[in-house]
Image (cartoon, rainbow, N blue to C red; front, side, top):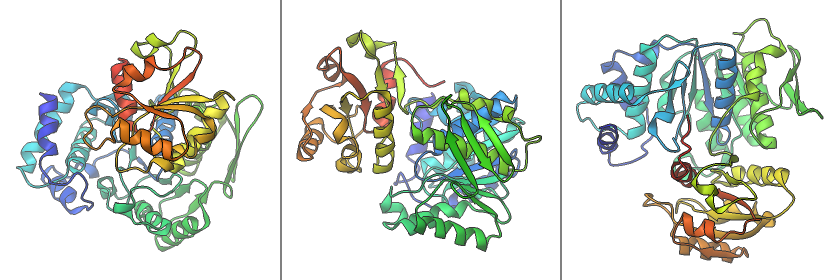
Length: 425
């Protein structure tokens, strides 16, 4: 029933992505404007790290005992992962109920899957009281369906890089301008460190909206100390954050950005180290995730399997740093990619860490590169690569002592987690 409902909604528009807010506004009006009945909002945009920052914010709020809604995308294994209601994943019954409701209201009017399901999420959020809503944009910002909200607590901008150029533009200033579209009048903006032209674009938009803007590296500075804890310095003082639960230097940046957003939201008092204890407990599946149990490990007795969804140059560079942090030995990759991505963007940053790549097609993804084509692309990059018919064959080709990571696409990461029966919760 749930799958059938989601499949019907996916057929309402000929395009998967068709940026704009008009259809979302029209359907929200029919639904009684649930986007105007939401708890205080942390609105998150950017290219990389949106989900991790959202995960840290959610964990912080959870540890503080706050009832928190959360909206993220895409999902890895189940659509339910996109919507958390008062701290818990929406259950199948509640999800089906709100999807049926929004489908009836829409009356077969053309609308994209993301638009109609975002409206459904707003409807679900409006039904249950909560203290906070963590709201992650999908693609872009200015024309993203989440951008119908008016007065968030803060607007958060994670690192901006080239991605989805066919929708957001080929120049970084164009992409930054789209992301900056979430900035609202007089609402504080908290941004990760950005390259100069991106920073200038964000400052210009913030000035236009009379929105105070705070940048990592200028208005808040972090440093990891020998204990693994993080010292965060900002105008409000110096705070000690616990060692972040997620792996990688970029995750320290994400944790600091989440903490700075809490501080500059002017919504939490008193400001003290205890506010940030949740940073030690954040979970974000498919991002340098260690797997010790399940079918994937049947081929492994000596070492775990790792899974990551890096699929562009920026995230692959962060992944490379994380893998180097885990071990100074070389890695065997099991990789799959979509044909909308450039092989070199993902695997060149990893090249010096790779001993071999076993390529697979991503099951259930028509846009997946074939294992053979991806293998040829990797060989062109000077990387030893062999195509395999499926995940089992790729895993069985690895050595017991290899350090193995499954990567190249969030879709492959999701498939691997489903195959391993370790669904995100």
